[in-house]
Length: 311
Image 1: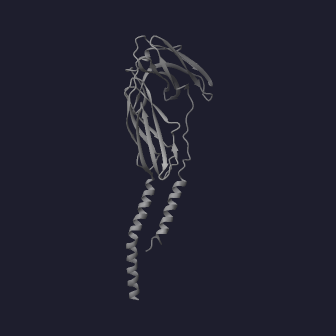
Image 2 (image 1 turned 135 degrees about the vertical axis):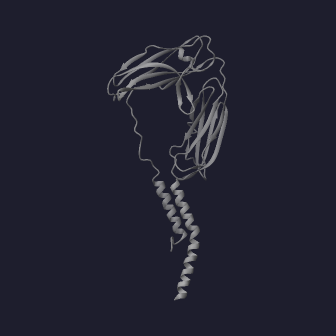
Image 3 (image 1 turned 180 degrees about the vertical axis):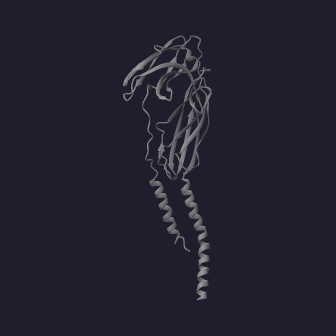
């Protein structure tokens, strides 16, 4: 019994399989997003506060044109911090959230008609004895949405305030690790890192991901001209990632991932193989056939010789 006529035929079959995989590597669907409800802009702002002085601020609340009707809203001021798993967490006051008590809003509630915008003003009154360093608070806009059973859903949108109280601030931190996987069955090439801020004020970490062919220096992807920036809160560790969103379904690449924070740099360089599991199974089957084919051929030759002898 002959399975393939020649090794050349096997090579052609394998090339065809890879070509089909590459041809099907483009996603053809998009996620639909709900645009109804109030919006807040900007989502955050940075402030520098001086002890004993008042700092004004504002943000805008809007009801989109496609809204079903007027929306009532009210404000609440909360502390926030960054959790390594959940992102921004709004909770009780902590070491760097005294600013919750310093913010005075010019209003506490209101109503917006469809396609209406409103600017909300506030003042941050920093006490004279405030220590230098970071301060963080969120102004939460709360409003009711659609009805679920006998209850109305309540939505919350946060406007974040990152503030630095001037004075004796200090910056320090570590890039604990950076990593890139060596093998991917599916998904995008992603560099991951952990960063610890040992200072008393927030600071940005810079992430640069470069992807090259296995041989050659022409970049498939790089964000070197526009590095990803992630803000790290004081006395906190943050896990972050940087992704090449257009990673092909199949390929072998050289990847360099570099993270910088507070003057410290950590870099990893790896060869990354991207190959779907089904293709690995097909390749394994083909290799198995190549291995056992000589034994099958010998067995067929012996059978042919016996048949000729009988004749």
